[in-house]
Image 1 (cartoon, rainbow, N blue to C red):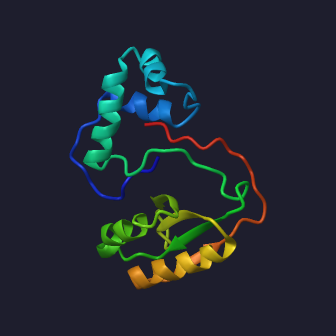
Image 2: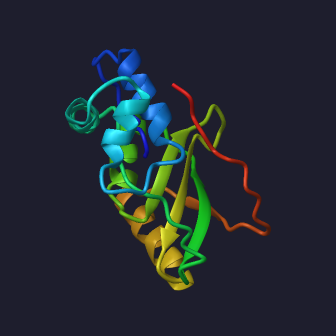
Length: 158
């Protein structure tokens, strides 16, 4: 799941926040996962599905789905950063997020203010994707492949 870089005026209520928090960990693998989530949140399956779709439609979320470990599947991962002028941040965010290989994208208060993770089918696809992003944005992408992997249990409570 990833959020957009753009502003939205949609108000998130407590159920929306609970849904996002729930979906970030331990998604149930069963015939009716949204029914199980609904039970945990004292809601119903139809409402949970409707809310997730509405957050996607409103741009509060840009993607909902599993995150696979590309390396374990024979692919490649890399952390990337860009120096994006503030006046172009939303435009560049849209262009970078248009690449299916971008797993998540976030803004930092730093000279390199846009950070994202690429997940590709092969190591060579990393370089090809970086070149395509540079061409689409006319900005340099700094590639920082991992040297060692650590599991930190990433979760962004809202």
